[in-house]
Length: 174
Image: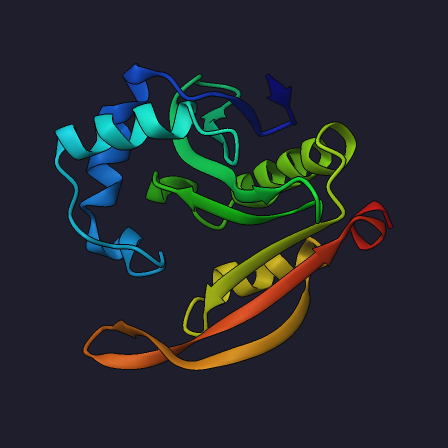
């Protein structure tokens, strides 16, 4: 378990699946994710089983420290041991916790784990160009903008870009 002032990261559990199911079927939340197809509870169970048995992924539930309530999920996926890099994913599903620092703190905890425990050198990430919260979070965490994939995503009835970000160990440690 990884603990901060606002949140703790812990292993995902089956009790989290109803929360994940609810969030993955909320268009206000999924518009910001790369994959946003509706998920059944069975789909969530299959995803959960695969995620916890795949060594190229590390998933955590994000829990509010005060209430103990599950408020989101974060992960490192496509972990590449030889190149020592991974892709970052995060979602704060509890909308009452948006813009309150929970996502940024969860990411910091995850990155400390990535660099100190997994000995990664680089973390890759992306944000939809219409998601100012995610862009601000990436910048606060020290990510560097590395490019824009124009018209990569189709959201809200139109094409939008995906901003690519990269974070190196030394940049995070500063």
